[in-house]
Length: 354
Ligand code: NAD
Ligand code: DAU
Image (cartoon, rainbow, N blue to C red; front, side, top):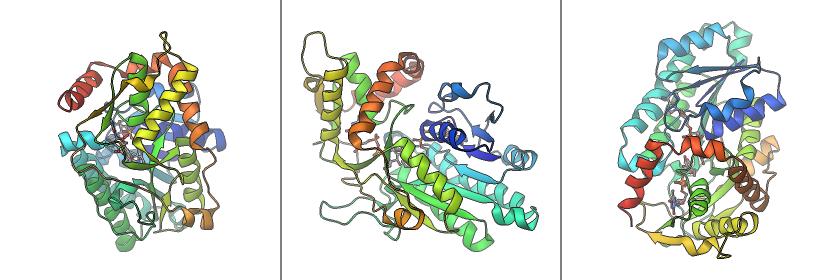
């Protein structure tokens, strides 16, 4: 059985669905169900005997230790985190608590469990830490994409907290020998992404007839990867990654934010045209920039391709169309996540920018 932290979030839930469609190993998801956690993402597994959900905090050492030993966990895939840069700018406390302190406590619980395993099981145990390309900071337009040896230069409270967690994971391997691997991935998009992030936010605001908020000049560049490609990469790293190593994961797909938003508008113009025939692109609005906004991220994903044979299978065109279709076809999911607290966040983040 594997333990997936943050399994009710965007990537965690996609990972569990993907894992259970490829392997017969059972999965236990541990998730605190913050605003970003949603059991609706895992509704398809309600009666699947291979799946168990536990609501709880990665920082609850007693709970984590009990789950590890009761279920004889052989791998931990650690997604749980506070993940939104803008929220980290408004208030960093939860990011420090979960991303740093929570990861520390999880590592300690795993270390105690792993130290008590019989030799062969201890050797097979894995702690896979899911991290981000944001730990490397911002690239100039001409700079080569991030490799695994790129300097850590995190610029936001979010990326600083993820960088700290990466360093803890590294240290638990070097000092205690805990069998860890870390992945640093670029921007994901796809089904079940909470609509605080650019792509789902723009799809839903467009359909609602609201302004589409572009921070600053919209020329910031991200390297977009369809979420199931990320899940496949994690499966490969878990199965065959070298202990103590880090693997960069990316889409070879650099796009300026404004181009992403135009691409979404063009898809919506075709798939869900406005009654008056006008393009959704007319709703694009430039708003105040994100403080400390990183200009460009790009991943050099040659190591994972060379060592593990992984490459993304989805193109941005096919992945984005699947994503837009998913949001059009899942109105109930959308309605459920757009609660009062979601509306409060949108008001807080966007009113002061306009
Ligand atoms: P998300 O915000 O959608 O999900 C995070 C999940 O973690 C939620 O279900 C939440 O309830 C849970 N959680 C938060 N604090 C917790 C705690 N203390 N204990 C237990 N559960 C807790 O995030 P996501 O986009 O799915 O990202 C998952 C991971 O992947 C994060 O570690 C993030 O840093 C990393 N990552 C994300 C991206 C991206 O583009 N979204 C890219 C690279 C890496
Ligand atoms: O690079 C990986 C990271 O990608 C992950 O580690 C993070 O968890 C994930 O949230 C994501 O971070 P970004 O800050 O890049 O994602 P976000 O969707 O918030 O923003 C993408 C770009 O779009 C960024 O340049 C900011 C811009 N943006 C975002 C929002 C929400 C806008 O222009 N307008 C917006 O309203």
